[in-house]
Length: 98
Image 1: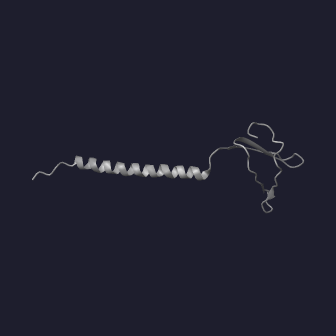
Image 2: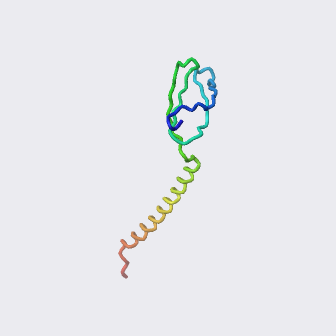
Image 3: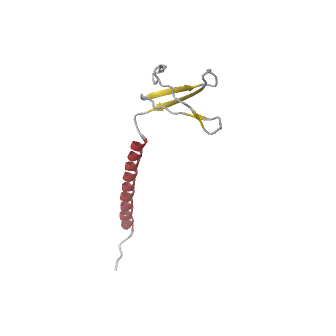
């Protein structure tokens, strides 16, 4: 649980071996935001593995959309800088006197 207590109502979940590799995978969906610690071990209690991770209130799609918006704004700023550079370059060119 995010608050450091054991979740006694947390459902059991299964681990499935990947082929015959000795590597097992399983999944669950956390039900609260915060920092989590998952402890996995054999039924006998041997072979314990601990993993810590953080569950935030954002999603990858939302982050991608925000980054895309910033990228568009940067492109626009780049276009404006190019216009300014062109204008400055024309000021640096002395007028032709005939």
